Image (cartoon, rainbow, N blue to C red; front, side):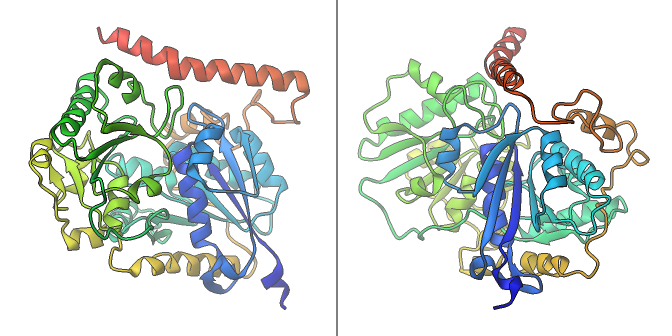
Length: 446
């Protein structure tokens, strides 16, 4: 058997939250080719997946990682500088950057520097966890420079290319795929009991009044339909954070209510919850796309308006927009087939081929004679001298991508005492961000 077929494909994923870890790890498995020059899936070849969790306010807890259910051969928490050092010392075939835009940009500049003397470097892939409904230009240009910028739908691919071409940047990296976590059995009819699931979001809506309103309507729906099971699907427990900060958890808001017995709070994997769902309700969660993929009746709420700030404007034309009054009266939205197809929600069976183009591109890059050229982000000290340095400095990097003086872990591994101090400081930091800062912000609004 050829050596290329027996040597494991080495893949690294850097993520900054539980949601992005799920997206990054699943994407890596979807796009990993079986061997250089072969666009087939990696099923015929061993893949070693090493996970790196970027230290910060949203670093996932062990519970959150367990709920995501994605396994890695190794998993460790790192700072940006520690990660760059690992990338200098380790040899990978594929790297997935599952980060917020600023994190991607900082890593691209840092990686460009640590790989400047390497004849071969990994293929670098990045993208978005779900629906892109805000900061399109900002987020895209911060991701420019990766070998592949993944678009989760045909609509996103067109928009991404238009932004890059509009600023004179190379748009060849844009590659159409689909959300990597779609799947599960198709909906075949009502369960017993009929189950309504509200997919909550950490930061949408963000005001106490609006969140209390949605919770109140959900509880009222449960009282109006005692024969139904009404579930509030939550992303995190109080004190935990995901991709977005949740300052007003529904768990606390529900304490002032007296919900009926058929109303429950649930956690766990969204796919498992969807297995028993008859109606998925949300403001703008990506869970709506998971639900539509499985042909589950799906409602995107209009009660708080159809607004960019809520993200539900993305669903204009979907056929899924509805209010609680309509749902209380028995309305079940019927999705528009053309809209669904444009979103990469392949309910008709084409999902299995959604990642072929990405695998082909990666296989071609892995087999490129002489290795890959240096990473070339659009933002440089010349094109964005007033913006880029601040982005890099947040990750303790200078304008050239080198660690700033005093940056953590620039020289060696910390000793035992330093590790204890670092853990204590990290705990204090998280407490400040997750508990104290929200209180101060709310006091400022009084």
